Length: 238
Ligand code: ADP
Ligand code: MG
Image (cartoon, rainbow, N blue to C red; front, side, top):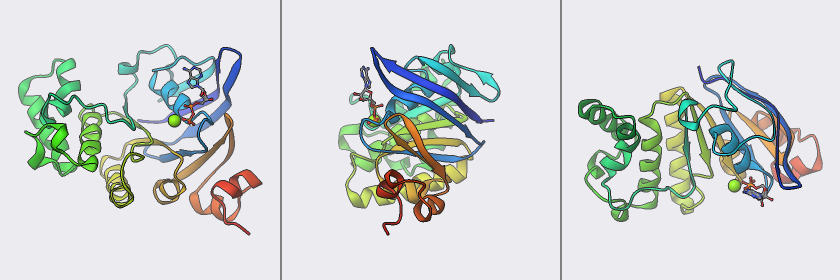
């Protein structure tokens, strides 16, 4: 479970084509990082996978089933955004519980899942606090907690660390890698940060202007960039 295939995905806004035929097979449990400059279509691609944006062309296939016309909540996907989008008036507990309340889960199930997520994310002691009292890193972990409780097969992350300072980003890279190992879920992670891509990815997908410039393991891309764009973006300058 958690196998994702993109087949010739195209997206146009008006007359402008921003995603130009992206094809990729993501394996179960794989950590894929999409990397590329601002405006190259990373968020648009992720939003199409999540179902927050329609595709103009192509197929999105999850575990063998075409999901283009499936509602976001039915795709077995949870997305974590750059802006954590927490509810400021709710406690951490209630923020994490929110998707379960929408699903009308029982109080006992909610408690069990929220406490399990809090333990994984080291938020046990913050459960009764409001987001305003938390550090940036803690807030981001609450947003991840809200994704975890839905037990998705696939996690989508859109630049989740870009609002954190450098030291926190480094900690969170390690946390997310640990979380990936622990949950065994498929993760598709978007960033413009080469360090995040190099340290977290099983495979990196380099996007350039709506095209895939290259796909490969971090070291393969670093040592053998196929063109000057990849070399300039991630490769070993020679
Ligand atoms: P990235 O996340 O890589 O920075 P985006 O996917 O956000 O890039 O955007 C890709 C391109 O699509 C940009 O040129 C952006 O201006 C354009 N775009 C994104 N969303 C919309 C929209 N809703 N309407 C029109 N153009 C959009
Ligand atoms: Mg973006």
